[in-house]
Length: 518
Image 1 (cartoon, rainbow, N blue to C red):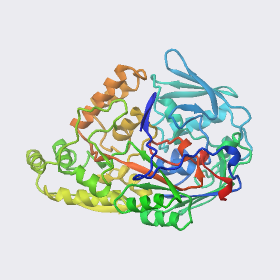
Image 2: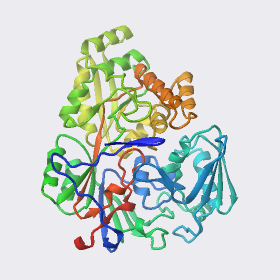
Image 3: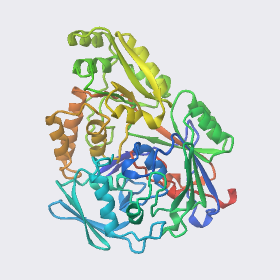
Image 4: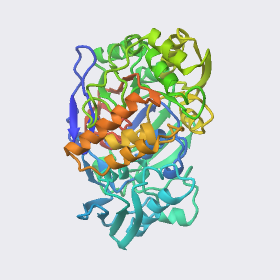
């Protein structure tokens, strides 16, 4: 089902596979076993814990949720709700956001969460030359501690989307004392969240409950273990063998039947989430031949999207050729996916005046990306284009592409918040588009952010952006994919969790175990 979320639309489809319905997680807090350990199997390693400098926002969000609070969070409906801030208000001109802080909150090092610490964090994240989230905070002009419990955030232009940005890893708040003492936060993070990090390796992380946390419903485990297992089959086996309780999976031809069998056994439940991630191949428009728009268009026509959908995604992937999924403000139903047309692709290459093409593509060494890359390679060969596949681990692949020296990347989107502004920023304005956009296109994107939420003007602005992306593509959108959270039947609370980054990165704060099972 699609749920419209005011300023954002995030797709949550909570359903069983096949004809099997999943259990509803309605267990009350009093029935939760707070002595239990949650074992979560994830698809990547931590990659560093200091929020502004973590090279992979996808991983810092997953591993950082237990540790860090933000000023605001998202609830299961996608609404912005209090976290460290209990209330907030924009000024009439939309240029000032004033937020009142929750009293008495402490970091796990015993220091206080104050407005001055919030200002120190946001200023560091926005202004440090090495910050990787500075772009996300680009709408802000400055930050001020009006008093110990009041933060004033000033904007350059009106931008209601900033509340969603503050709910992402860009808004994670670390201890001011740790900053002053130059603690290495990449390996020793200090937050105010429901859990604290005990240990971390390239294979995962271990957390213990923060007993002083202000909301006991958000830390329902004594211990949390997150283990990194990149291979899909191995991740499924970890669940099946009883070594893990919850796992995240992309849909692929090999794993889907096995997951269906697990659900039918009655020992597992599954939660399916449609995400605004269109299995893209990112093209660096600074590097030949992708600096030529006709070449990029030819590649789009050469890709058989339906074959990839049926052969790799079990027919569950919605074909796409535009950045915004159905249901999100700005999605244009008139922009049909590019048809598979080898003749047209060859004609475009001829018009571009290019001969046989060979290029290297960085491919995340995980499913379904590896299989998608192999399918694309075979399809491109039909038009005289040779794609060399360079497999890299999931953590390294995006930073390598963002370095600007590789022509292409096959990996998921990294969307900081589930709204059209953030999706467009991720597609066009982030380092995942190393070639950048034209000044005209950049102005369209900036102007759209100023449109009032829910207004016809906002919808029209984002439809114009979708058309611009469609007519002058910087990448290949294949189809909007689904992700699955598979859990043992005694795990509850998954259906109450909000998902940031517009994909089901598990925020384990709402998870728990029934007492009878542990």
